[in-house]
Image 1 (tube, each protein chain N blue to C red):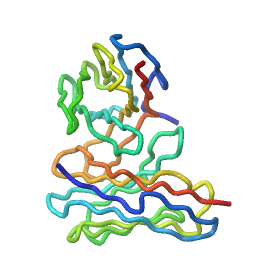
Image 2 (cartoon, one colour):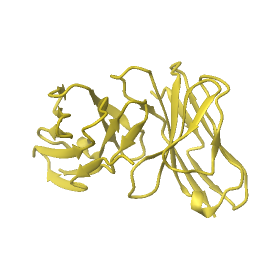
Image 3 (cartoon, rainbow over the protein chains, first blue to last red):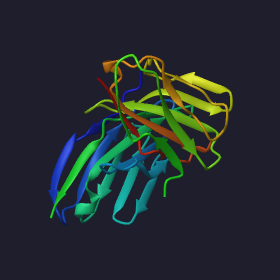
Length: 111
Length: 113
């Protein structure tokens, strides 16, 4: 059974703070690492799909890095806004097309 | 705009009833998936399909069944609902390449009383 761990489980920050979360995953049989944002009452939305060791991806104020050799990825949010409040999920993809998800990090940004 | 549709969004049903959760996508994706999520827990894969007439059980054992007669349609059926089936069910689809993310539906929150 694959183990995908995310930390912290939840996080409260003030508007304007920068923050980051961690995802750890198996370092063997790696194909891709996905990040999703899941807002309440909406569908999970893909943020990044990362495939190469050392990958860095950016979308607006959100960026992510990938280390496949040690099995971790960081998601960074610069200058958090209340609309960034959501659960952030990471998911590991091995040699098939199935994703194994972590439990997520629940981010609350206070105005 | 949703390209993958799940109905119903919420369902409260009595024990022993047969239910079908619908999932349809308009993107022509070959690969489709059903995930189950209990409160505070991660998404667990219960079924997946890599194309028409192809279905496989996922990592979490489930009493539900699925079918894939058409590319766009991947319904999930529970023959006899029980309170232990109370959960959120999410459908997703993907293209085949390594760099593609999943597109998720909005989920069905099922309560069996």
